[in-house]
Image (cartoon, rainbow, N blue to C red; front, side, top):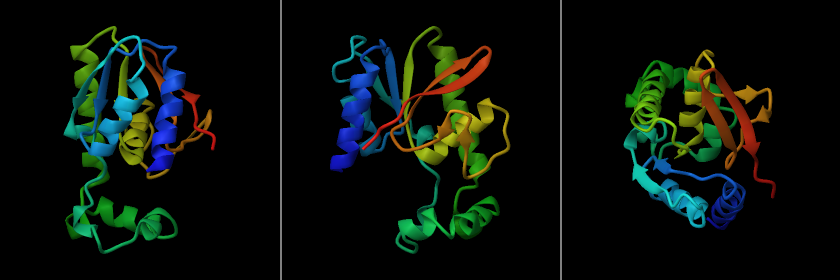
Length: 171
């Protein structure tokens, strides 16, 4: 969307102050495109790798059956309950978290001392953050630095663990 492109361009301008060595996306076209836009002018000329372990929640069984508004607002808690029970063939959030954390740990160990940009999806990334901060798994997360929004960029250090919001798109 036009908004998504603007968000990626603004994030890219901000990220130009960092040398990015590698970009890992979920492999969906929109995340791959976002990675390309964000790093277009980056001095690190990073390689972009698609990794399906960073994909969004597996809710394929609900495709076309619920609207984004239903899923995102008042019924979010009910869908969360159903996801935890793996009802209707949807992916359990614990499984989503496990695969995202597995991908994160793989790249962390395979590319030590590299600046890696993950481009993924809201739920996948909050599940990763919750794991890193040893927080219970939940469909919502606010950090001390504020609410998490689309197009936010976080700096993550792993030893010791710290997570700080360093960029937020303001429309």
